[in-house]
Amino acid sequence: VALVGAGPGDPDLLTVRAAGLLAAADVVVHDALVGDGVLALAAPTAELIDVGKRPGNGVAQDLINLLLVRLAREGKQVVRLKGGDPFVFGRGGEEAVALAEAGIVCEVVPGITSAIAAPGAAGVPVTYRGLSASFTVVTGHRQRGESPVNWAALAQVGGTIVVLMGVAQRGDIAAALMAGGLSPDTPVAAVGSATTQSQHVVRCRLADLATTTVHAPATIVIGPVAALDVVAL
Ligand code: SAH
Image 1 (spheres, helix red, strand yellow):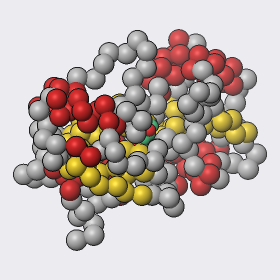
Image 2 (cartoon, protein in one colour; image 1 turned 120 degrees about the horizontal axis):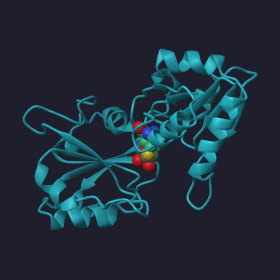
Image 3 (cartoon, protein in one colour; image 1 turned 180 degrees about the horizontal axis):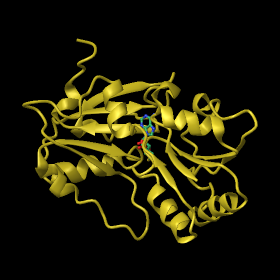
């Protein structure tokens, strides 16, 4: 089984290794965020299985793990294809553990994470000399049993905050960051469906994030760099 990152959307942003594995796959087990352009690179004979988790439905993680183990035991070349990088909020780590526990050899193929590609597609560099010396990638969506994000601490770091899965909670996130000391005037850029035909960028102040319309999937960038558009200069 290869745990493969599909990149942010544009098939041209796949790695050469990912494209090669897709072309040779018997089965591709993919998420909802993997676009048709990427799936089109799978072998014509490959079976495509959509296990995408969407709000309220989707296949439970335990079943995905069992499916991967079963397919591997059938002797199939399995590509487990995940949006962005497989180990950035994709639960790829859990799948790797499940495969290892079942004694199945697993190859990890990194992908370009939307945490960096989405800001970049909007002309926002996540670091910039004099403006931001660090970036923190954080989830805006907490699962039961996970420790809460320390937004007050993040507000004090002074670098760029990149929020994935944060559209629904953006008002609460903005409030928590401002309560932690981040200025209401802090620039925000939300980049939706980055590197696809429907890419859209919304910019606002942190204080206005709650009332600004943002369509998922989007990556929300918070910090001084979010005011930049270095590509459109
Ligand atoms: N493993 C993925 C992230 C999975 S979490 C990666 O490395 O990119 C899913 C979240 O990623 C979405 O809620 C959204 O915040 C972000 N995302 C994924 N694709 C995106 C895209 N094309 N444009 C903007 N954000 C995207």
